[in-house]
Length: 236
Image 1 (cartoon, helix red, strand yellow):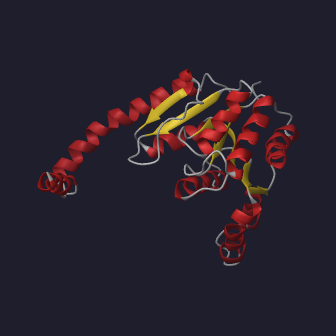
Image 2 (cartoon, helix red, strand yellow):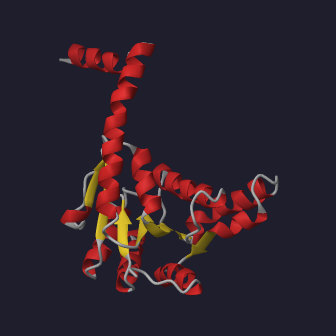
Image 3 (cartoon, helix red, strand yellow):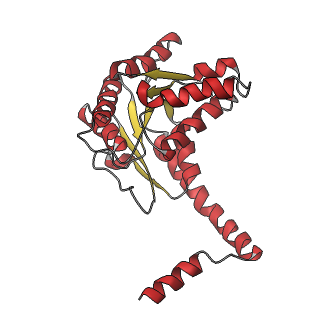
């Protein structure tokens, strides 16, 4: 049994020939297209939403979990739907908060070996599955009116920097990107200011792309105030 497992692992990591790579890439195009089509069709009917990101590893008794749920509830009461990555932890908290106030509760699930399984607070008609991270990230950005970024790991950072890169380069219109937890994010913010900005690797105005807050109320107000400024309303 051990020998068979080793052979399977060896085969999985065996270098492919150039012809094999080209063939696999050609067939993958159809799968990628199908994920884009399903995502566009399903999400375009939901209306304006806010995406909430954060660690999949946090349990419901954690303060950050509770804060994410409060933020989702508050935004839901204002008319926003909530999009999460569909899994446990902060994602579950976000969908749970939306569900509590009958706001649209969307889950963009990704097939992973560990950590990811759909939470039970996603609306049945608003659960979308993806194999490709990059397709999923397009859906987050395209159908979000704002990002609320709770403490998290590499995946959370990936979504955060994807958004501010697209806004910085004007590939998408600006929307609020709110980091929740000043203590958690202070090291990253200091590095951006003292390393990137100091070496002129970003523009001074780029520092304003991030809003850092502590409380659920501040996070909710940051999203709502952004749209009040431009006389926009959610789900209108």
